[in-house]
Image 1 (spheres, rainbow over the protein chains, first blue to last red):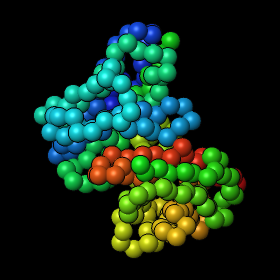
Image 2: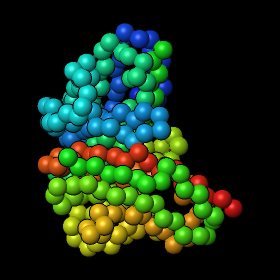
Image 3: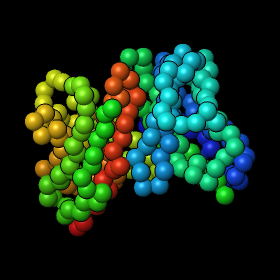
Image 4: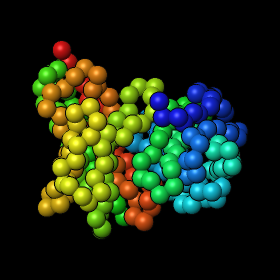
Length: 112
Length: 114
């Protein structure tokens, strides 16, 4: 077990709606990253948070946003959902300065 | 920009035979390279990582990878495949200056047959 839990495991939304995905990391993991994995593809980096501030973003529009909380939990918010947002969303956390990431099992989002 | 290319989308081997999963990288600097494995309904798990120490890197479950700068390759091998090795494998490079921000390859699906 990685100690990283994500909720919900599955979610169905319709186009135009908003969604919030949640992640709970191990104690001491003050760096959290979110990745999007489309079907048949490798995960793509969305953004990273360190000490509750965004610390790098991939090629994703501003309607993808996040929050990190002092209790090692975090959220990924997506506004104005599009069909192409259907994917597995992965949360990964790490100790400060460490390259090893601990991944959750992901949230499977379907946008209809 | 840094990137990785996984040369095979699917690899099929018989149990007990060697495994070779191929990966080439592109990087302006000395890269940090990783192999991750993804079993169905489970999180990604780190198999091994290269960070400019020894060029032959040993990982978990009998896997190893060799960093070859002249060939810009980082192929993953295992001497003898086990049924439990069937999974998706990703070659990964750390984004320049990004610490643990990662760029994943497209993945290789490993099938192990009896």
